[in-house]
Length: 79
Image (cartoon, rainbow, N blue to C red; front, side):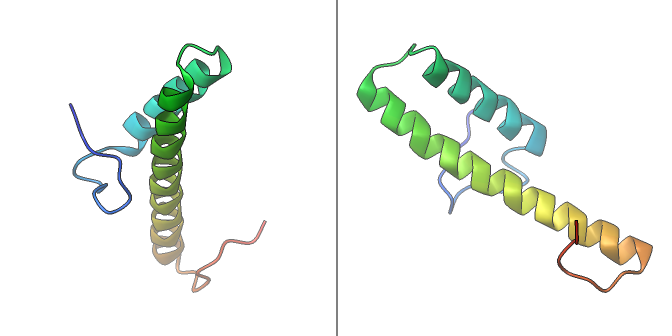
């Protein structure tokens, strides 16, 4: 499944949270092991940041849904 990871193009229908995490882990692994050249590393970093934003939005949405289901009115979880 080929999907764009630009912030404006990522949606839940194009990429699942778990797939985004897997891609992000692969990018991190490649960067940690220097398996890519500098230009590719920069592109991977850019893609990784987009994936990270997508994952954060997905988690925020899931937390909001759980709060709504449990009857809580808080929009920000407290830790």
